[in-house]
Image 1: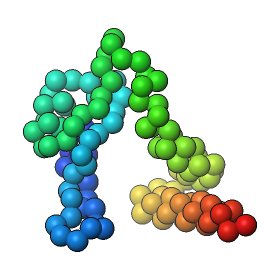
Image 2: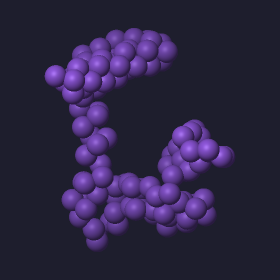
Image 3: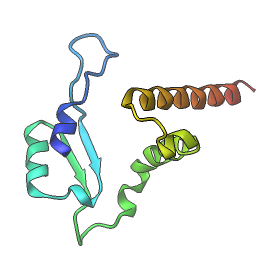
Length: 113
């Protein structure tokens, strides 16, 4: 599922010109360590930063993954998202968006004080 996920990344806007469709490098844990994944990422022009099984420690990637882990822990504070009470995916996405907006609001409020 790694390669379809990379192919589904939307274009990133910001700088003038044609927007980038792919990242420069990809950080992943040992679950994605395979020759096939590394070769496919390299063919797409992405530098794979994947921990190798039985060689690298998990602590090496920890400094890059903490942002994602922190964000997921913020979202898991909202009980409705953890338990997934909604049957429709659109409702779940809406509540996840509301949770993200609430998190950003609290961070902005704290920054202005």
